[in-house]
Image 1 (spheres, rainbow, N blue to C red):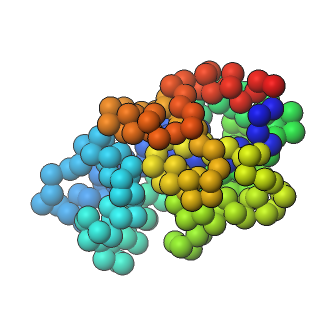
Image 2: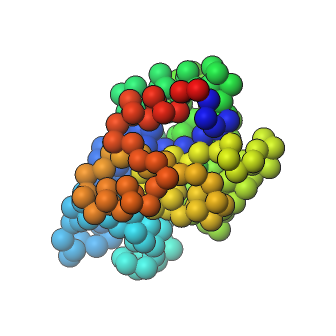
Length: 219
């Protein structure tokens, strides 16, 4: 295998969750928190999550108070608990084969560790070797380099042994901060400007899960 360790994003990289879970839960929260506001479209929501990021959307763009952030979190939590997202077609087979060959599977995501573990058990019958999720303190979350540094330390890995896979800019920024290679997960992209940015700035860019599978499992 080309890499000893995959550091995978979760939402819209491994699971199709934003259109079915994260976006509708956010729209529901906004109906209460900003009832006078025109609802964000899916494209607008994804664009904000791309840049400046979801935390910044809540705190800096929409100016959520701490109480409002807690309410939004409560709505989101009810959605994530009640509706496990589907893995992208072919991804569970890919990751099970990679694991069988001795690969290390880690997840760095803005979803919570509990849901990530649940999704992997449902689809792969194992949990990732390490998970760094939303439940971390904010200064340790992606795009902070902390998750990558901890993974490399835990498994005694060099930079060239690691590949970060993500569909959005925070994952790219995290990889660049540690000088490790980055693969853009293009199979979820619906916005041309995001697709163009990720293609131009990734070390590798894969439009389909199958093309990524062929790359990652080749010798």
